[in-house]
Image (cartoon, rainbow, N blue to C red; front, side, top):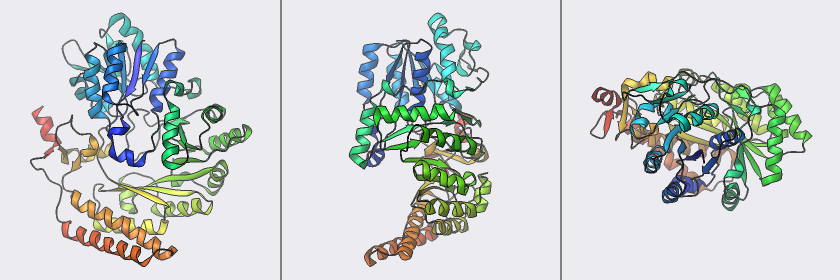
Amino acid sequence: MDILLTHGYFLYEDPHEQQVMKPYPPLGLLYISSYLKQQGFSVGVFDTTFRDLFAFETYVQEHRPPVVGLYTNMMTKRRVLQMIRLCKAVNAIVILGGPDPAYYAAEYLQHGADIIVRGEGEMTLEELLPHLAKQGLNQLESIAGIVYVGENGEVCETGPRAFIGDLSANPWPDREAIDLPEYLRIWKANHGRSSVSVIQARGCPYTCTWCSHSVFGHTHRRRTPDDAAREVLWIKERYTPDLLWYADDVFGMNHRWLTEYAARLKHYGIKIPFECISRADRLTEPVVELLADMGCYRLWNGSESGSQNILDAMQRKVTAADVQKKTHLLQAHGIETGMFIMLGYKGETMADLVETVEHLKRCNPDIFLTTIAYPIKGTPYYAEVEADILRAGDWAENGDRALTVAGRYSKRFYSFATRWMVSEVALNRAQTKGGVSWRRKAKLWLNTRIGWYGMKLTQNGKEQATKTLRPLMLEKTIL
């Protein structure tokens, strides 16, 4: 084995994910696996999703891989740090990739990683593995796209590596290297239908200030429509899923590509219901009609806020009015609508929150999810609020999702705001659509009042440094 590829997501350790039970395999790792195998490397894949840390430790001890590649994100960081130690115990060289290590390279190196890959991993590993086999960790300065510790203990970063130009020249993800039928089984057992994920393009050129572009940059590179359709045909024949999840950042961004892709699917006799993410400004009536004809049953539209002031501050480049219009257009064509709402963005006021609730009422999405804004390192939002960022615990204990911003409304305020928002929108739907018992309406009304008056009572309490919340800039000063 030249390299073992793995990640730090353990489904059965995550209570929230066990309630959802909609797991998907790590496509990025599987793309790297198939690419390296095509180049003649011996690749092992250990999918942690349905396993535990002891099983990983046992595997590493038994196989003793010379190199381990670990996909890492903010949610899996704590487990990845433990996995690094297990790999070092068998003298493996540990390489980290994914969205989180790129901007925390020094910290991950300090915790035992040997090399951080920035950007896409395929071509970097293709060049790096022969080098490691011959020279170990010496003379790494010739390898583009990595960060490592130099001879004198300093953190060294090489120049950026070019992105893959022709995605269709790559082999499809190495799904046969994992137990994909177990993913399908779990989906079927919990939701009555199975689902497989695919990705037809890499990257997003948009400028949303809170979004990380650490892996694919601001590019948007598409596979050829025929290559993309033939993969779906193979998935259909091999796994017979009931649903597809298009994991593209913005599916069908290019209308010509989408039209050609739909034609290729029809040519191969494929119509599998699917779910995807898009943007209001990319949804024209012909596009929505095409999506419906292709089998789109749900489309997630990143609304984020109903306040145009906040949308503009986020550099979303959409209008709340257009989001409302496109939501109704989707529903008119039988496509369920989902929305992501972000609370707590810099400068948000009570008036902005009221606008967002009114926006949701006018949109009336089939489902919406809320989150409190958190600054991800490397993003414009992070840079804007960096001087006010507060962290609970040290870096190794929490990811960026645990960061908050001094001066904004408190977490308690936003717990009331979420309660009010969810209940107010649900009550509005119950009153307009009917068919809801008076008891249910009364409960929703009560929750709106608790939420609203809770917001009023807590609106003067702002996030601030405490014994448990330390300013990030203070940590930098100490270091």
